Image (cartoon, rainbow, N blue to C red; front, side):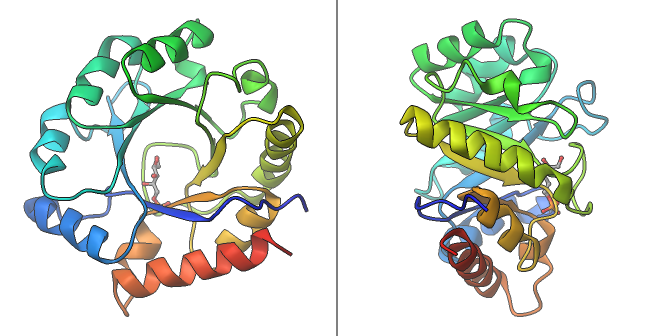
Length: 229
Ligand code: DX5
C-alpha cells in the first residue's frame, strides 16, 4: 500500500448532528478535537437529499475557529460557490461529475479566495483529476454513493485512492487526499494505508457510545498507524 506521510486530519460530517441544536453540535465537535468541519451541501438534484444553504453555515461560523469546508453535491456549483465562501467556508469541494468545465470552475474558486477541491463519485475514474492537481488543495474520493450518511464503505475505492496519492507524490503537489463515506475505526485503516490523509466521518463520530472525543481520537490513531505501515 502507498500510505502517506501527511498528518491525518479528521473532518466530521454534520449530517448526523441534531439540527435543532446545530450550534451546540458544532461547538462540541471543535471541543472533541476535529481539524475542520465538513458541511454536506445537497440540492436534491445532483443527489436525492436536500440539506444546508449558506445561511445555515454562516449562522454557526462565529461559534468556532476550525476551518469549514463545503462539500457541494449540487448541479450548479459555479453559481453557488461565492455564497459558500461568503458564509465562511475556506475550502469548497465540487464534483467532477457536475462540472463540464472543471478546470475553469476550480480556477473560479481559487479566484474567490477559497481553496478548491474536487470530489469523485465511486464510478468515476481517477483520470478525471489527473490534469487539475495543480489547481486544488485536496482531492476527495467518495467511498459511498453520495446523498446519505450511514452507508457501507466501498473498499474497492482503495486502488483509486492509491493511484491519486502516487500522482500527487510524483508531481510534487501539496494536495490532501480525503475520503468520505462509511469511515470509522475499522475502515479508516484501509483508506489511510491506501494514501488518504483526511478522513470524513459522520455516523462513526455521533454514534460512538464513548462520545465524540473518543471517536475522533480513535479514528485518528487508526489512520495514523495505517498510513505509515
Ligand atoms: C454522503 C456524505 C457523507 C456522509 C458521511 O453523501 O457526503 O459525508 O454524511 O456519513 P457516514 O460517515 O455516516 O458515512
